[in-house]
Length: 365
Figure (cartoon, rainbow, N blue to C red):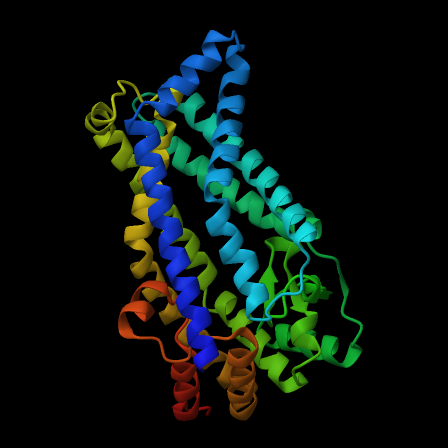
């Protein structure tokens, strides 16, 4: 418990630091003229207009990564190693960082290029059109995740344990969830935490079972984990979160549409179409994300509780659920009893002890 508290408190602190640091960088970079000077410099050296945005965005990505490297390194590498939750070598971690950075850059370039194109083409309704594009692009990425993105970081194969595979497929059929198959992923090469996921859209939908979970949990415990994941789909939590996220995206872009003329003047800009004003747009999303996080976390906790209850009702495996939660808390160094403020802001799942208590009181008939 003491080790879990120390680990969790470090993670909370670094998450807050990361958020405040990003906001500070955006404000300083925009307000002190750094963004304007960078765009002006790129124009001065004769960079063709077509390459201006990609190069400017690349410099932003590299600059932020270097400025944020100490926090990122501590958060995602040093602490995980310190608490024996990862055995990944530094070279492999850096390679993953490079892959993630390249993917993030490509996705950001697509979205931001579309943003400026729509902004210039439809000045009166750009906020709605780009919101719809953002949502559709997110769905495409979700569909490609299991076949394109995850294989860049992990190797996975069809689950060889036929008894467990048949049990999971039967569970999916019982819960009327269509999946391609059940796969085992080599998470242990990077992390020693237990995990399982239900990923993909349509024909790419599949179960990914981490070897760190498969090798340490009973079939009953694994079944109740997957029943929980299937419950999210069955209860339409995924669809509801997509709708909520879409609504938030529309709201933010509409807020930018309505308030940006005034906000841009504060930072010394006169037009949203100016590439130099991009950090201000990012600032909207970063600030709004930080403010709305408790609401999203609260809704997510509600969904997680409902998924727990349905999983228990389907599997009738109260003891397996409780033992699985105890193991998961120990393996992942979960904060079982966070204080109310931390729970309110950070926890998108109910704390482990709350979930166990709810399971003990659940009616399974």
